[in-house]
Image (cartoon, rainbow, N blue to C red; front, side, top):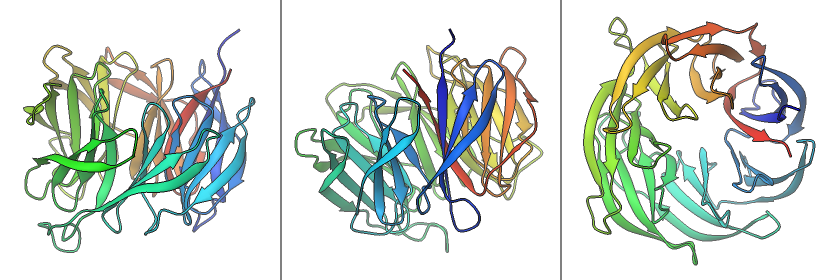
Length: 349
């Protein structure tokens, strides 16, 4: 009997979406079928607990916690304030004891304790970024876009695309407190949006939204500052498209041999081959996703299909991917969904 999976899609609810969309997945066919919606205001970003028991969602009132039932349905546990403007991204430590909320609008990182029953507990730390950016009306002040733990979880890396910095914090897994450790300064007006580590944890990949490129760094757990060493800078766009685009989301294939980056404006996904020894990327192709503003992309568990969440096109498009040819082929009709923003996949017991 093949494994069963369910997918949860986060969306904005100012148009026709009501909340979190739950989809049943047919991994072999590369399709998803909507089961239901769970009503909540603007669940724009979702994250699964490492235990697989809970789902956490951004919402207007802060953060919502859900218990994942045996069939994949969701039961609300609680909603907790983040004491600030609504967040845009969530990260959990591996022990599922702390939840980190990135605040785009107020430039704040909020750390919340997660209780044993999965509920969101008290705020343990709040850090406001300071500084002035370089692009008027866009990067003139701090905008925290995402965070990620280093593979050893000693450090929390926080991307601030408003001030072109990735701030590195020591993270205390007992108290949930942050202490500034180091800063990676990205190129002027580059807007570092997302950092992702390779599956083996040796390399970090930073998507720079406004310059439309990826910065590659090696990561060394040396116990000293300067753990990140620059390796490569590579563009995410086709040579023919040079304006009105923004690099959006980077993911790895489950085997780590390839990675993909979506590009808004250009409305493409660029496929790379990964050199696992050096961390360098080699462009295979850049192909259209048949949707407007692919803000988020997701890989099926079998590495044979990808989903593109087309935020401004109000759709999800699915493709069969052939890494050996650097090719994606549309797999079935688009799925209509209002303002999709991200998607997570859960394997059912």
